[in-house]
Image (cartoon, rainbow, N blue to C red):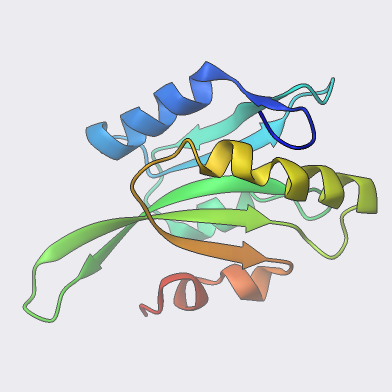
Length: 135
């Protein structure tokens, strides 16, 4: 449970395992439910377009997300790395930012296998090149 008293809904972990092992989904977006009692799955998507992922991040509210990056190695092989996002836009309300910041570890610590963490406060900070350094 988070410092904020918010718990992680089991569906979050089930969907994360499906993303990690099944490779059918490309990303998951997490939110806090309307009663501010637990972290829930907000959206899951199979879209392979990074722009679709960015478009699903709300302009005025915080979210967490996991994106399954696919990249080419120097040897030409294909690899995947899971990236965790803390989306906290400058335009979000202070209470929303504080709630998400104090609840992040409750979710993040339950997601094993994350290779990279990205914190974004504006869309340019979560651009594909910024997130993983790949063009």
